[in-house]
Amino acid sequence: MIGIVILNYRNWNDTLRCIESISSNPPKEKYQIILIDNASPNMPEYDLDEVVNKYGIIFFGNKENRGYNGGNNVGIAKALELDCDSILITNNDICFFPNSIQTLWEYAREHPDVGIVGPKILDRNGNIQKSNICRRTSMKEKYLVRTRLNAIFRKEYRTYFGLDRDYDSIFEVHAVLGCCFLMTRECAKSVTPLDEHPFLYEEELILGICMEHTRYRTVYNPEAVIEHLHGGSTRMVKAFSFAQNVKSEIYYCKKYLNASNMAVYPLYWYRVVLYLIRCLKYQDFRENWKYFRKITREELEK
Image (cartoon, rainbow, N blue to C red; front, side, top):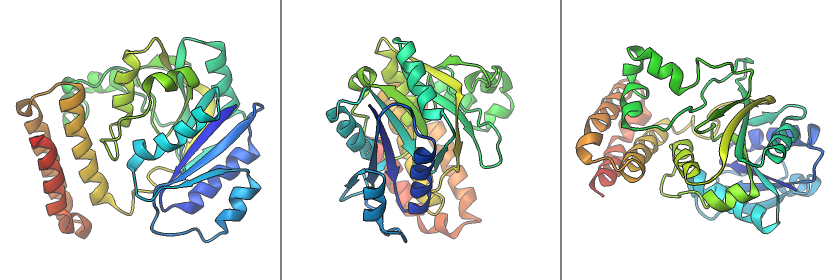
């Protein structure tokens, strides 16, 4: 059985659309949708109980927002408890195309050395999102690829995101995007529960490093296709999301790359400048400046 874990926060309409796309394009294998609400401050306009009953959903309402990893850990634990042979992690702003889930499941079943397999991701305009992470993100990549220096180090940027590869072909990667991927049961037992310290972001980078300590490979399979609406749960809290991104980046560099504060500080101050630039345009960023400084400085001082 495939356990399909959907994490919801605020955007109930996207969640319903995701559920309906699964129901319209179901895998041949038996599956169970596990819906986790991360303490949304709002309720859906539709009858949630009716939807849960209609689609046979297992629903968990977290009492507090546990972030991406913490919220998904609830669903992963339930899927393992149900003895699912694979677990599909999906954002609620995903729409599944015909045979997409089945294709991911079959590829993992036919390749026992593959622990994680990710699909081709299309944006709302039908363009391929070419964002697979094709090698470990070291401090070098943090500076040369994940800052505006990528305009100079174009080759590093292209090889990092696999832009030199054919995104219509299957290839091995360091990590697929966290918005949607299938993980085998045995792999899940090796790399979960996910690290809950990061509230948002860096989850792909961390999972990629965790996979290095297993016997499993991570593969991108474009024969499975999904649509991603992008950021439905975070676009209304951009300053908060930016702050959490920087906090998670500091944690990743220090915890998983063993980087010193001296190595992290230039990257941190670069992010501070980006934040201040946004303050000139967005009131949300101005209002949350103290919050940004507080949580990022606290992470640096740990």
